Picture 1 (cartoon, one colour):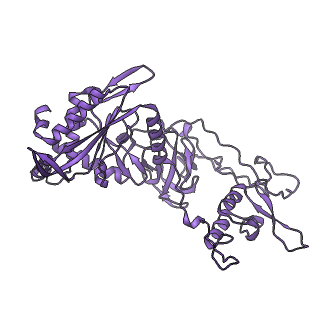
Picture 2 (picture 1 turned 180 degrees about the horizontal axis):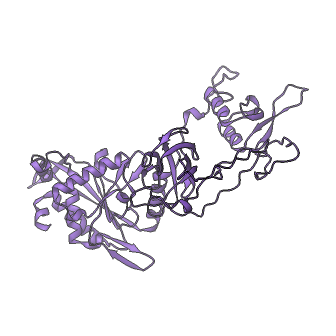
Picture 3 (picture 1 turned 180 degrees about the vertical axis):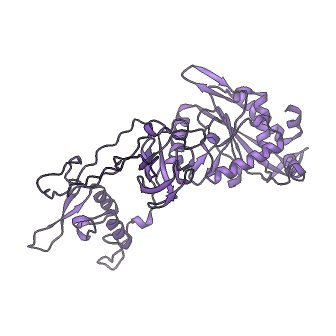
Length: 471
């Protein structure tokens, strides 16, 4: 009995995902709960388990392919539920000259609604999808049916192949070059003449690989010596460029940043701070037994200072509800930390960070950044943030103008700590200093409130005792 596993909604109403990597292949035995595929949603990379015991019949989606929720991605041959299960009906052979359907379900397949919904992730279920599959078309352009034609099929040149004259010797009729429109466009972009290529595709058609191979070897674009002895410069080829697909996390990040930048009126203020006392306190904290197994960084004190500032100025920890025409003030802090992951920028957050003692906050910061950089942050980790810190100092950057995380009112950028000339009690001294940048939504936060928040954070980092006094 063949069962098809449909791509589930792994949280928050996401409508599609990219297939990152398959962990199984056709013919392999699989068990219920075994991880079979990694998918990338707009928010995170998620591992999906198989819901049945059986054998992989075929993979219905390729790595790198974007698939809508509810569309089958793998077919698994499972055992019949009882001995009374009827024998499978014989499959109809496709008519000569037609292509097999992209994904077919034999007569013995059991629909999901008959078999019952099967939870694929803890807390998530299979989402009912209205997605329908279009009938696959034959090479002749007709929908494939189960009827066997009474007359032999007449070969028809595929309509998607466009012909282009092939160069010929004088007096000889020009041959026609077959290539699909995307291949022709690629050749044009790379400066490759299709007439010079030998096609490796069906009926001698030129494929994308043929064009890229020609570009890599310099066909029609390599440097050549001009008539006066000088050499011309070869144009860039496909081997000189790299194309990165904008999908998954990177696609979501780009859309979110554009939306935030052009929706909320941003204002950014800067403050240079003497953090010598904070760095001294940090060294002492690292020696405490409560922090023995933790990598404690200045970010811990910055985070605590921001949390205290939020308690003193709650409006900075809010969101703008345009539909209700209300400002929603959050009396809890889900502290987001911007993380540069391999697949793009993500902002996982520490839930209820304002209620955590300092050792637990340090532990949560370490776990969050490690998980985020490894690409293992879950949709739950990324949802519900209320205010964000971006630590640009780890990249050797002094300051920046960060863009708000969508749905939030403020984001604090923490620059690198470095030795800086500083006036102390009228005397020039070398101190540890850094620059803080606070971007905020000017619809909610005016200049006075934004300045007060930034000033308070700076004061606590100049004298960490204020964290205890104000917190």
